Amino acid sequence: MGIIAKQGILNSVFSYIGVLLGFLTIVYVQPIFLKSTEIIGLTRILVSFSFMAAIFIPLGIGSVTVRFFPEIKNTNTKHHGHFFLMFLFCLIGSAFLSLFFALFKDNITAFYHVKSPLFNEFYYLVFVFPFILALIMVYNIYSASLYKTAFTVFLNEVLLRVLQIGAIFIYYFGYFDLKQFILAFVSAYLIQLLLLMGYIYRVDKFSYKINWSFYKTFFSNRVILFSALMIFTSFASIGIKMIDQVIMGHYLSLSSIGIYATSIFMVSIMEVPINSLERISNTVAANSWAINDLDNIKKIYYDSVRVLMLIGGYLLCGLICCSNSIFQILPEEFEIGKNCMIVMALCSFVNLSTGINTTIIATSHKYFVISVFLFVLISTSIITNNWLIPKYGIIGSAYSTFISIGTYNLLKVIYLWYRLKMLPYNKTSLIIIITILFSGLVYFIPDIANPYFNILFKGTVITIIFGFSTIKFKIAEEVTSKIPILKSIKL
Image (cartoon, rainbow, N blue to C red; front, top):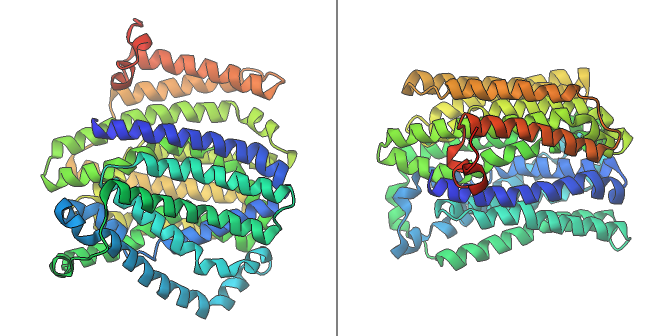
């Protein structure tokens, strides 16, 4: 996949380092040093609420950048001052959102008053935190449009976690009270933003001078319509990952949210490959559509399904087969989250198995289709969360996500099959499914008493099974052919 593969590998390396740091944070640092599932829940609901609010702030300029940057790109004019234009959009959007939060403060705080009153004590952060997150989102997109994604992943997945771990330690040793800890937690994102802006300036030398004459003609009806549609699209695509915790704050305690967030974090390891791939494939797909290179689009789609299904299946088997040991490591109160993790792992596998279909549709001239599908997604999620959470507790939210994501991905697969005659499933897909089912039998091997040894043992068995299948049936030759020891193995 050329540049996609190169950037994707770097992204994956930093992402997995981040997952390792995140795992250590979730399993050891937070339970031991925060000593409260309520505080864990507070940080999660603040992040989830602010992220969902931040989606509206850029007024669609991030999505416009993804879709139309090939038309904007001009190194001689510093891309017509697009960097600063993005800042202005965010500033205007933040002003409108802050006005909304001020006018409806009583309604929002009443929503959390009974089950999550601690959130209301930090309500003032919703006037600042979403603005910081919005700028991070749009400048990550700007960097990706320049094919520079690895450093942004490092900032988001590694540095941010290190800063937050540091804040937790300082809080534990008594140098911060709760208010100072939360402010330090949020400030970690501000540091990320400042470093990101500095990095972009170093690689791109952006200009503060906006070429208004260019943008006067650029912002045609099609761009404005696209921008409006993508505001909702972005909200639904990112919100689906966080809306469950926002709704939970109404029905369940912050402690329950903390347990839920900790449990499903284990599944984040499965999302790393597709997140890494999408960061760079957005721009490549947009360029391919711009020159009508359908063969390249088809290749990207088919390759992404094959590779992501293989990686996703491997990680799915690892999480399910080692689930008992994973939750044996965590404090006993987290045990109720095990089934949530398993359901969410299945959900992530469904998402991975459909490849980068969202990117392909969203960067095409039929981009509005994604908005329709996402409307179905977010509507299904809101309805099922409000129905299942009161009935089943935290597992109800996991069920809701599985139903919503499953429906959403099925719609995208059917659409690409019907409109572009692209159905990326073949004999290789069947081999991967059989490999997953066979590896799943490892779950029934009796557990070793020591959870770490059990994870190592079962993980090794699963690795051998997947390694054999990958090499024997040449499922991922573009990877195995570059590793000498694997290249030399003949099965």
